[in-house]
Amino acid sequence: MLSREDNELLTRVGPGTPAGELLRRYWQPVACAAELTEEKPIKAVKVLGEKLVVYRDTAGGYGLVAEQCPHRFASLAWGRVDDEGIRCPYHGWKFNAAGKCIETPAEPKGSTLKDGVRQPAYPVRKLGGMLFGYMGPAPVPALPLWDVLAWEHGRRTVERHSVVECNWLQCMENSVDPSHLFWLHGRTAHLASLMDEFEEKEDFIPFDFGIMKRRSTPIKDKGIQVDQHPLLFPNVLRHVAHDRSGEGSHRHNLQYRVPVDDHNTQVFMINFTPEPGTRTPADADAPFSFVPMRGEDGDYRMDMVLAQDVMAWETQGAVLDRTREQLGTADKGIVMFRRLIKEQIALVAAGKMPLGVRPAEAESLIELDVINERIGLMRPERQGAAQ
Ligand code: FES
Ligand SMILES: [Fe+2]
Image (cartoon, rainbow, N blue to C red; front, side, top):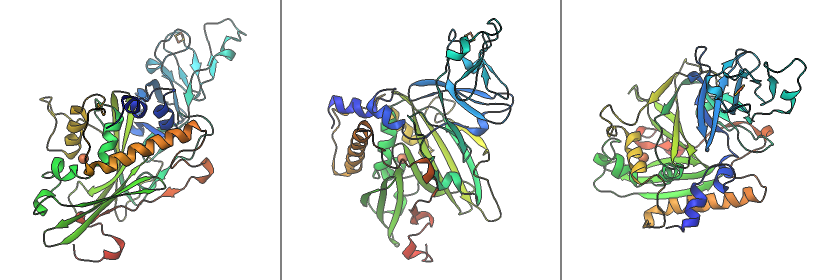
């Protein structure tokens, strides 16, 4: 249970809010790279309560700027791009990716009006088929080169899911809540049929980038099986599952839960399946798909693990009223995560770098210790053991 003040502290994401300032210290995905095409090079996005446009210019560069033109507030989402930047559709003011106004074509020759005009703009980078924006203060930190984004020895796909209609924290608390796997996903994830009764040991191990969650489960005739994967602080789940081709390979994935505003969350999923003989450059666009969580009848797609989670998150309420919840022992991961967020908010308020943020010069590949013995991804000491 939380006080009303703490619930607000952890859930509000707009500029100037404590959690909003914390989240702005981390690069956030704003779109899948393949969503920007020659025909449609501009996309309106809302991130952390700010309305922005992300665009690809005709020279192949990217920009992320505030959506409304500073002249008279028309939307740049309907604008045009060229090799220098983006032009407003209304009177043609043009901005570069740094937010500098470089043309005001309706003004008299020699006008200096543009020199005093700046559009809010954020750095943007492409990695692993995604476009990432950094909305925090200088200096711009390292973009974490998570294995799923930067590996090249296989194939990568990227997904944008339908917007989840609730606050981001509900989605992330789910990632330190292992007991729900058996109950919410038991049938779909083929776990329930492997156990005589629900029983598991759950550990939460703080590490350099978040919380490593480790589940040890007694499986009929197979002894203890381990499933270990991290919550990457503050809003990413690193996971592994069977590849969707059903050929026994492993689909490593990242699930970013990016706050749109206080009441909506955009989930992006990046999948990487190692595959002999296949190479995918880290800076290449990856095949994109949009994945709705509801079917044509408007109901949750309850045959899908991801939609089962969305059902649980949305039905908790737009912002879960944590003043009335009743936590038990099995919720200890959630308690640890909330405490960690509060600590990191305090660090940011004190002018320090929060958990996992590295200076730009420390940018390097980060490989994570992910185990899922149920699908044959074994602990190092058991590698080679019968599955
Ligand atoms: S509103 Fe954008 S140029 Fe006038
Ligand atoms: Fe889940």
